[in-house]
Amino acid sequence: MSAQPHRAEPGARSRVERPALSLSLQLGSRIGEWPIARARLRRWVQIALERDATLTMRLVARAEAIALNQAYRGRDYAPNVLTFEYGEQPGPRDSGPRCTADIILCLPVLRAEARAQHKPLIDHLAHLVIHGVLHAQGYDHQNEHDAARMEALETRLLARLRIADPYAPRRPAN
Image (cartoon, rainbow, N blue to C red; front, side):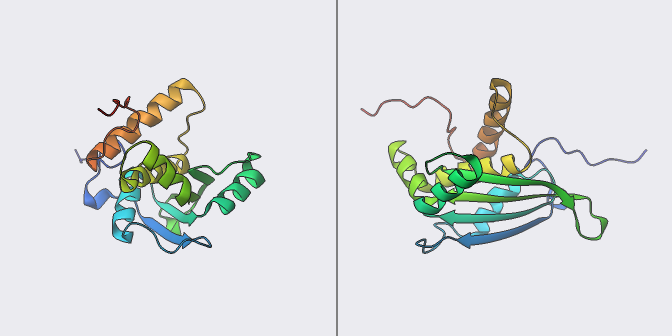
């Protein structure tokens, strides 16, 4: 009897079983730099991956986020994160299908939300990176059941990073 690797949930794999990741980082105009080290950002992405992925993450200003949201979603506001999932593509050398997506993060919106929610920008960024990576793999929150499933998974993954549940009710400040 041979042992088969077990893949329970994203982030529950050993180092050997970790999905392959090709991650490209981009900066939109008027954005000086990522507010986080590349290695840390890569770790956030990696814990949310269930399969090999080719992802591009772009940090943008409000104007670019609005333009993308208008062009592709028909909505006239700057979202905190936009994920453009391109489905599974063939992987290199018959390694199996790869998740392929662009994830757009709007830095001014993230900063404003973090301030309003009284949480560190880095914690909020980690949450939305994981949120975007889950969308890239087909997770969604269009109905109550799917939203509950996605939120529970995000909460478990963030707990591994010692980041509080972003969906927990906030207590008023004294």
